Image (cartoon, rainbow over all chains, first blue to last red):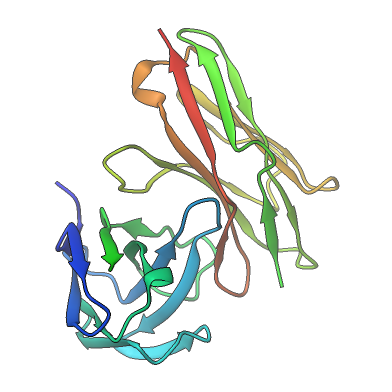
Length: 115
Length: 112
């Protein structure tokens, strides 16, 4: 059983739709992350939340809007996406965002297709 | 900014044989960790092995071991006695003061 759960596993949405990705971790971690995984590219860190506070936003377009209501839940709200936003979106968590030895635990991702 | 380079997009190995996946990185930091993650078809990234830069001894986890060459900034993964379940994407990652930085991955195929 994974400690990090993402829903939905697959999502197809039109460019005018609004949808949300959900991530939940059962590991008692304090940091949560959103990554974008595209083919033949390194994983791109999108957002970091540490103790529910957003600490990083790596120049992500405003059509992606994160929300972290508590340490266990992380959402990624999507609106007016473009076809190039189609990718695998991975959620991860770690004990904290500071320690270099901090291992990140990943969910199984949401495969997003924008049509 | 740190960069991680995996120069082998794809590798294949015969079952029960040994394979080595390459990774190089660029950094000016002296204190950092390096990781190898495995992403099977289920898509969930799983930590395989980690190495602290200050430790000269190469990390080992069962059939998985690393060859860490700090001066050369090289961090290769050796998989011994390859098994069908080892088929996956393998990502090298660097963690220093800033974020966890990943390479582009190597797709490993196991030939029965």
